[in-house]
Length: 439
Image (cartoon, rainbow, N blue to C red; front, side, top):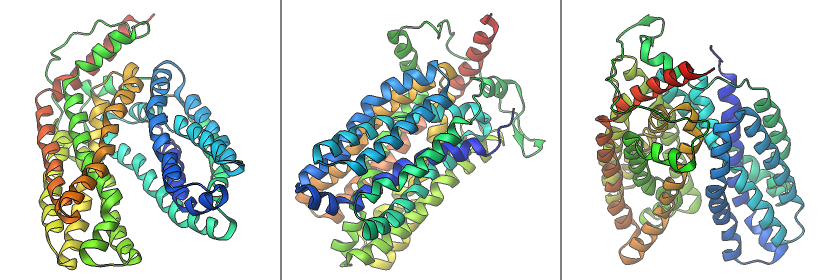
């Protein structure tokens, strides 16, 4: 069954709201401090606590995403998120504002339900492209948060940074609640038996090997220990998780330190540095979408490891461009190299996400996404590592030292090429086994 673009738009809107609201929070910092008389340290706890609660909240969301109707779970989560936005805007004290932020953080752990739905809405050979389009919702939300959030705070005060998301949240709740609930695993079973299609004409049939494992798990009654033992056996997923976590150290570090780099190294003002970072961000936005299209294009031509190779080689290319960009003291050279480097920096995101869903059976994708989120949260150490290195050397040297980590992640990803085809075949075989045993 074909579902069209509406599910992708609705799911992408959830990411847009979450990311946009976080950036509009940054616009409200001065107002919050003025209203409640709190320090920078106290304000800094707001996003930090959200991240921590989000990691914890991912566990129940992941479990429920595997057991109940995912569209209703996601709609309910966004409804609570919308209520919390209103409570943020009404908070009379910093303590109540902090409590409302914790509620927001818990509900933003709804990613497992969204990625599980995308895997069942769209065919395997379109999965990377769809993941990229879904994640581009975060870029749209970021622009809204920076522009609309800034204007709202400027003209209506800091509380409007939260209230402006309430009507949008209501619209997204309605849209998500109206989504159909796809049957789990249909596309995984189809991919093993059906020629991959390029447009309307079949090109190469992706030939998968026999699975190296034989499934015996009853997913409906499996214990947590059995589930996590099953997930730990998926070698290609763990190579991908570790590779993307290592690469994420650089990505998150750049998000935090990029403006300061242009100010310190090239002597720009905050506004001028923001322009260069925006150009860098545009390249990154192209990469988020293009990576999925590129990986799927190679897949439909018969390259079963297309997603592995796009992640690996684009990570190496990003390092080759960004290392001289940071070592250079010429603004034009750094700017040009960073523009192209930004594109290659984000090319791995969509194919990596698609790969990690490809190799997990549909009944476990929610919990698998939870475990991946917990591991990948280690990438939040990127800004801290760069900060320590900057104190010891300079920010330019610190960034140059960290950049090769991205290539290391790409090389680690290449190790998944041996196990990915058999893990992919295992998912198809398991889907058919579960269907055959169903009453």
